[in-house]
Amino acid sequence: MPIKIECQGLPCPQPVIQCKNLIESSNPSSIEVVVDNVPAKENVSRFMTTKGYEVTVEEKDSLTTIKGVKSAGGNNSEAEVCEECTVMSTEELARIDSKTLIFLNSDCLGSGDDELGAKLMFNFVSTLPELGDSLWRIIMVNGAVKLATDGHPCLEKLKEMEAAGVSILVCGTCLDHFNLLEKKGVGETTNMLDVVTSMQLATKVIKA
Image (cartoon, rainbow, N blue to C red; front, top):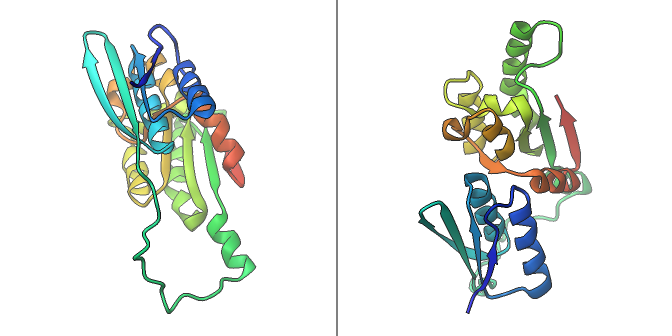
């Protein structure tokens, strides 16, 4: 029988934290988490996936049940060794391991004139691909979540980066505050636990 956590009525990131604590303490083979809001549903589902669970979602009335079943992992013993692979230098390994996190908390860059700030933010977002393979994740909180919504000039640039493998996290509490949950056009809805963990994992954080 799966272990069930009742999280209705709890704001993010509490459902994710309860799920995290249960997995770390008991490592159950199956788990069910009941929530009653969209950010919690997306956050818990994604968290379970990162922990190796196969996730299904069932919705009934105002409640959502996220079910996770532990995936059967394992290495592929038939994998072939690439004869062309070479030992990488310390510098090459460092570049691969580099994780640059971009933290955005406004839809404008700088202060003084919002129209100018919006243009500068568009230019900033458009230039981020120049960071190359080190560009790992973009986190948007507060007014910056507007960049990820339908109709914003930055949306297509963000979609291109996501398609190229850049992780984009958009604050669910902030989207809800601005009534933009239904207008999010890119990225995954996130919570403060993800934000703090991302900062811990990043090798460099750029705040703009």
